Image (spheres, rainbow, N blue to C red):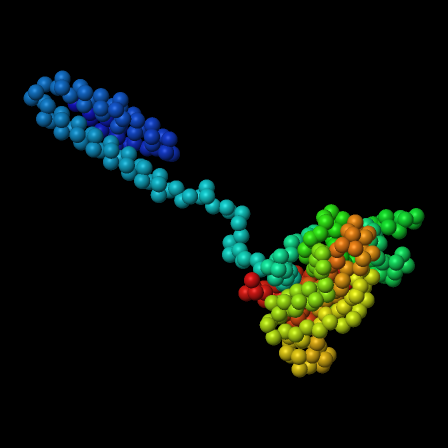
Length: 344
Ligand code: DAH
């Protein structure tokens, strides 16, 4: 027995393992219930009484040594385990900066928020539209100049039927038509979206920009309702001191029509270069939905009336943040975008 113990002592002294599996195998071989050391412990009762003390001491030494050795190897592996498997070595060494919301998104969300609080739902429509929804059903005469090549981007021209022309929508009023076609009053929606016009790009015009359209159709809706909603919007958006004024105007799809100015929020109405010294800046077009439009969309104009309005998001953003050049909105210059980090 003593020889066996000495032999195991030697072995244990030189234990080596190159991975955790090998180490576990060694633990099982020496220290488990059915391992070598336990087997010797079981045989211990056969050791003659006079040798019991010496053999017992050596056997305990062996057990301690095996435990120590295996614990030491285990520690060594744990130290080596640097968690390399969890590290993405392809990741950039630089901190990844958080993005910011685009100023147009910030303002769009704010507009949506204000109208949502007044009970308006959001409606969406396609950017690639047909003439029927962009012009015809909105009471545009067949020879209306807005259909002209200079304004509209044509995707597909139908030589026989102008209403079948496929175009990029030039205003979000097309979503009014789609909404009225699909639902009966009461209808109360706002339609935010991108629109396209064939314009030369400059600091004050772009071939695409963004609008929010509003539409309310119900029994007994009047111009007073329109004015009050727009006043509330202007004061929520630009501050409670903001004044509005409505000037008579013309749009094919509204009668009567108006354009709305707000008191210039840059100079407070005293006159500055932005408002051309007038103290007022125009922000939207509006009016009572023309009965022809209601009828074209399947709504009985003898029963229902309604108002509509449409505004440019870029224009509102310029007023809020005084962005001098429209092109900055689509250049994705992060120095410009980062200026809006704190806005939302
Ligand atoms: N669609 C018009 C434009 O793009 C804006 C507009 C004016 C919308 C009056 C309306 C409205 O709904 O009633 O210039």
